[in-house]
Length: 263
Image (cartoon, rainbow, N blue to C red; front, side, top):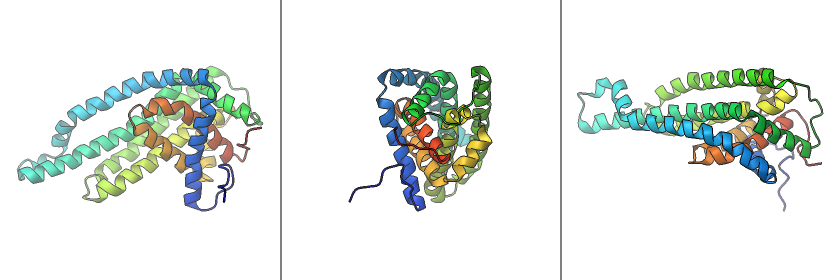
């Protein structure tokens, strides 16, 4: 019995979540067919990746001091208890830093590499029959709006990350449920960020993206969480970023009811 194509309507949240994961895999396949674009798409990710790896490495270097700073109440505890609570605090800091770093990396990379990623997205749409509702959007106003939308999403990741950071101190729950919630939140924000180019090409802003992706949230989450997990792997963000842009174009078309079958 053969599996249905990725673009086939999926019923059930799990099936739609897996369909979203499949969009990233298919985006990777589409992207690899254009070696020249592949190399161009990696350059902005390398620049941004170097900045965020340095920032995260700095956080990891000082995380013990930060953990001690926020747990002064444990100074008089036994060595074992004090070490345990500060390990939990350190993990919470790294989790918050990871969430903000992934969302921030995506935002900065999209701004730095806007012309390259726009071209990748356009090439994908051309393979699928073009953009039927495209509008003429000047480059600089489009870039400013994209940057503003990305800043909003980065700010949102910080606001959501703070309560998740606090929840990270809860025994067991903070080390099991909270990371899953963090991946889901990060995945949703990445789906919103990465679909910026195809929606902007249609003259649509962040509220339009949010409304469209909500109509099939499991698929958007499947795609976004898959990207989020890939971005946590060393060099994964650099290598997967251009493919994520291609997959996001498929996600945008799917959410708008447009074909994702090659013409």
